[in-house]
Amino acid sequence: MGERGVFELSDATKDPRFANHPLVAGFPQIRFFAGHALVARNGQILGTLCILDRACRKLKPFQHEALALMARQAVTYLELHQTLVERNQRNEDKDRFLSVIAHDLRSPFSGLLGLTGLLLTEGETMERSELLGYLRMINQSLRRVYELSENLLKWALLDQAKMSFQAKELRVESLFDEVEAFQKDTAEQKHLVLNRRLPPDLVIQGDPNLLEASLRNLLSNAVKFTASGGTITLFAETTPTEVKLGVQDTGQGISREQLEALAAGSAARSHPGTDGELGTGLGLTLVRQLAARHGGDLRLESRVGVGTSATLVFPR
Image (cartoon, rainbow, N blue to C red; front, side, top):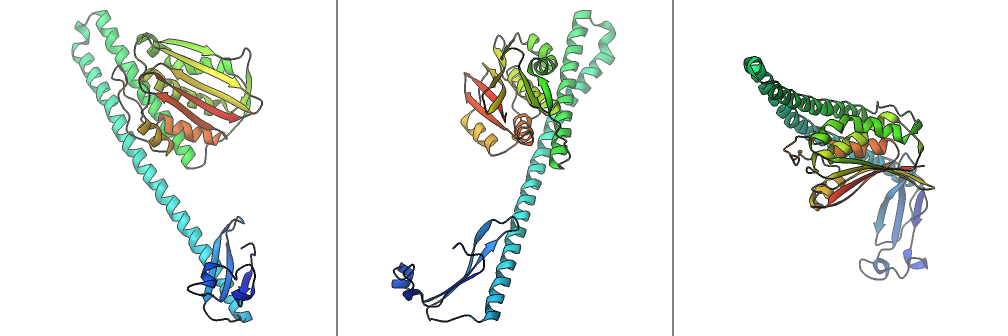
């Protein structure tokens, strides 16, 4: 029904559009129909509020007004219901998110407390190499806390719609330099090979903070889930309509169940990396939200035991 006011049909058997309809020609032998479109505030038609009768009749003007009023009330109820559903979903996401934070913050802080306590009690008697080893472990724990804090801040800004978007001209090579610098030491410790694949002197339009945060999370995941001796590639590609930035690894891959959960927006608890590393548990979920804020999307391709390719796709 295309009409946005009251549509009335006094006798359906006399209208060739409806005379042969099963509900008119057969049981329950509908004769009268009146309906009013349910139009949301954005102009979208949600459905139709209908009145049916087995007897022929004609509505009076005040009944038309009453039907229109009921239609407006129905739209208000539907919009309110949708708002409540979305709010409940956000609350569930927040509860799940906070649960992940509590779990993932506890582990690095426990490690830091244990290591610093050991250094305080036995540091003076340790060999330099042993001391440096413990300091390296402390540095890794602090990096995990930093990553989680960064993700938490960006998620909070996204949730409150306060994250600004400031696009500017970016050299992708320089962007990759910034992203790689944060994970270079960890990659070297795991004997991982970091490669790049991109057109020379590639320049794009984008928000440097959003893109760097997204790629840093993707690279962090790749380093975490790629075993010693593996390869990780930062790549960039362009088409006439799209820009693609991403990270490809030869890691352990993501199961189909995990991919489906990520596609549904779930922030599952983090899993240990190939060397037992802990993560934020939010990386890919946050990256998807950051990509959407940038007007793009995150695409994942993965095979267990082969590796993963995570690609940020933006309109050019």
